[in-house]
Length: 132
Image 1 (cartoon, rainbow, N blue to C red):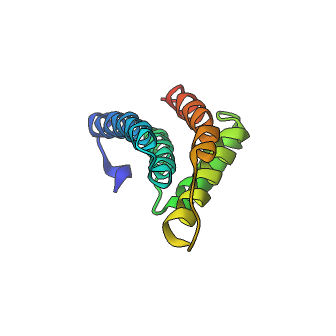
Image 2 (spheres, helix red, strand yellow; image 1 turned 60 degrees about the vertical axis):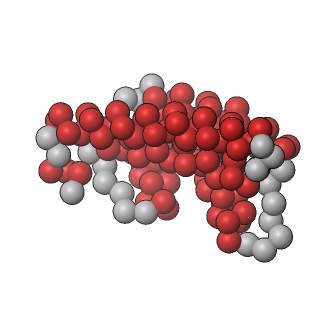
C-alpha cells in the first residue's frame, strides 16, 4: 500500500508518524509522573516505533508487523550504516519490556527501568529524526 503513495502523501504520513512519536513520548513522561511505569515503558516503545516507521516509510520500506519493523531497521538502517546498532538494541529491549509487562504475569516495570530507558529512547528517536 505505502509503495503507491504519492510523494506528497508519503511526506504527510512521515510527518504524522513523527508527530505521533513526539506525542507518545509526552504520554510516556506523563505516565511516569503518575507512577504508571508499565504504561510509561510501553509508550517509550511506541514513541520509538512510530519514529522508526516514519523513517522506513520515507525510504519506501513497507512493514507488516512490529518484528518486521525491527528487521527492516536492521537491514535498511543499521546494516547500511545510517543508524547505530545501539539504537536497534534499545528498540528491541523496549519491545521485549513492553511485551513482558503487557502479557506476562508478575512482570512490572519500575522507576529504575523507566529512567534507564528514557535517555536511550530519546537518543534513538533523535537519531531516527536525523534520517528524515
